Length: 452
Ligand SMILES: Cc1cc2nc3c(=O)[nH]c(=O)nc-3n(C[C@H](O)[C@H](O)[C@H](O)COP(=O)(O)OP(=O)(O)OC[C@H]3O[C@@H](n4cnc5c(N)ncnc54)[C@H](O)[C@@H]3O)c2cc1C
Image 1 (spheres, protein in one colour):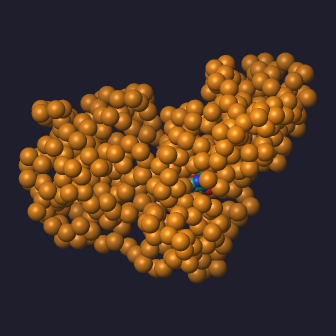
Image 2 (cartoon, helix red, strand yellow):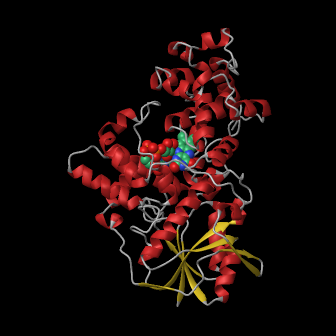
């Protein structure tokens, strides 16, 4: 029986479920034209994935295997592999709408085996007594804590595997019935080579050790490098969730405070779990339908970091420049977008999806729904972040603001948290606030009172 090992959200060889599948195997990676065709040629994620895929290929070779590379749609690739006598495909779970539909269709071509290699828990494992899914994070978290055993973080070892005969030296462009051998180069999948500067996952984990005890307190401070920077690696599986938790367990034994960080990892599980059980959350509100205005000018000012709210604009600049955004900033921006600007969360979600290196459908969609107050267990709709109070609290010296908005460098930090100053002064190369905070707050609450 010839098995395909389809790498996608699990680009590693350590502790890999795919590599624990015994027998005659062909590890593959597909540069999916269905996804790639809609991305800009300079997409950082594609560059990151390309680098990781080459590194994975080298590591697999060192293990006596290899990685076959394809460029095409998964359906075309699996139809082709079927003609070569492959019968089964193994892949890590993926719960977003496109992935679910794609996997179902692939399952009609080859026998599909979904492996829970990206999360600790299976979505059907954590249920309420009546068998329905949890709708509130804290009880879900408690249930996870109770269910958790060392088996959830057991390390998978490599099985005995034999590489199926296949020419892995080329990048195979599969299109309809034809197949063309291309050189393994970014340009051949239509992208410009870029280098994404990101700390290697084990270095990130090591660097985080001395920050762990202060994590709960420091993680919200925007200029304080207090978080793990693991989101991109967890997203693409360049480090496995089980390894991160084993690392926490070891540090807990040494007396470190690990619970606040573990809680965030369970948030990641919760959001994937919700999207699995309630796929319509990807586009539909769960709780309310808040008031929205399709105001293109507000949207343009937001995406070009021209709202005149320093924290919001700095955060958008961070996203555009680095492909990431501090979590506290994401929360403030999500609230501002939906409540101050009355824009639909779906548009903000799509903007993040376009730029975030760590973009993950479940984390992004559910977090946007949280900010908008529309999701399952969301931020209450009437809680509207005051961006000035947020920057005063979490970026008092305006270090974060000034890093991403250099035109504000010479303005005393205290003034950047004061609306009265920003409204009454002409700052070179920086606009006045798009709307007064209090006016925006009242406008939202008033509009909300008239909706369902
Ligand atoms: C509007 C909005 C959109 C977001 N979009 C994404 C996204 O697309 N992808 C993504 O991975 N995270 C998203 N987050 C969550 C969070 O901002 C990032 O996970 C975090 O900033 C990544 O930095 P870190 O790895 O240093 O996090 P740490 O603070 O070190 O957290 C450790 C890990 O826990 C997980 N995590 C932390 N917070 C959350 C959360 N709220 N929801 C789900 N998982 C969490 C991540 O995997 C993260 O790597 C979003 C949050 C908001 C408010």
